[in-house]
Length: 563
Image (cartoon, rainbow, N blue to C red; front, side):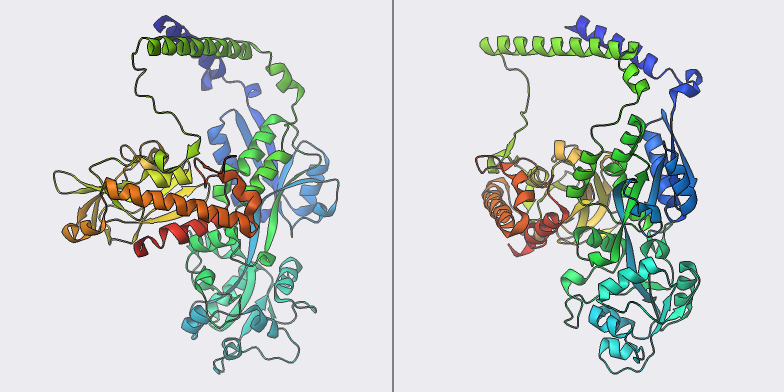
């Protein structure tokens, strides 16, 4: 067996040498070059996409070229080029012969001056679409007191660029048949933002990208997003409270809490679709892993269900002649040999395993991966304290408490793609948010089982968040906390025996939760969570959309201190 594995290792070494001979031996012909034209508003995002993809695929070179509408159309018509463009910028999208695929969404937002004298009332009450629509009626004088129905006689100064792509969206959102008329016209969105920053009574609509400060991942100074009272009840309800920070707002746009009439598409376009495998691979990456970079530039991600539709449109890949010939290269032959040997080794291992079983010899500490998820699947070790926030705590000999996520939650979420952690030295209280678990943009905010000061954190989770999935009680621990009220708070934690009973109830509630969701218009999505016999699949939330994650947060995480 050792000789076989050594032989495989040598073959892999030879193959790596052939496939990656080093920078000094790379020739220009080894590099696949993609030309990507982009409109000026998408240059930053497109450049980031290109840099990240090339970092992951050093054999690909992407040249990003800023182009006007006419230049973009001209280069697309010549074939062999890709383009990225927002829908309001490129008139050629109306041409049915142009191949196009949606890769993200641009959002239009109402903004006002952060020094508005009625700021507190605006944040608490919001402004309804009906009240905003009255601003554009004939013979109506704009007044903040009228918008808020509080009698204050303060003027509204409405600024606009006259951009029809924005005005038409706003008119549709407000239900205005005559369109958006009047206002103080400025030449560009940059001038609009500058004018609103100087005028405490100002109001305007613009693209989100124009008010995002990339450096600090927030809004530019002097600007706030205008809260929209969608149900016109005179207050910003819990479900409407999405305007406090950019992260919360972007997530709300994604899951549908923000009016969809104020969003538009970002497209990838070309004359007849991607022309080779490198372009197909790049676009597939853009609509999957590349979605995480949209947020940084003020754009909104595609929903998970949409991404699969885009991938289907990109498959099967269009293979160039050179790519077909490559399949029969020496490297491919070597790979086939290696694959054959690996299969042989696997067959040998199976034969050996059965032989050992017949002799009564254990085959090692092999933990099978369950295809189904039930209360028996959940590992609950003795000696740990568990909290209803689906966390665990264990006091070390030095009095420091180690904290992590329980096995039930990792079975529910599936493989994590990111964790958002607090910093050493931060003070936390039991029940306060302590970690955010992220899977392809969908997230759960988990609260702390204890109060105290964070003394250390598991830095490996930054690069390898899935350690929480593979070893929730070992390498996947999260924090080391110096407890401030351990003797009292331990009374609210459960030992393994009681926790198993509680988890049994949680599992039953989870099945009921998913069954109810399936019966309320989400059947097509939720069916992925159930096996044919009605049992839950492992990683039940992995393929479900952000709205269900939001519901799970509300029903299983936010209410943990009430159960």
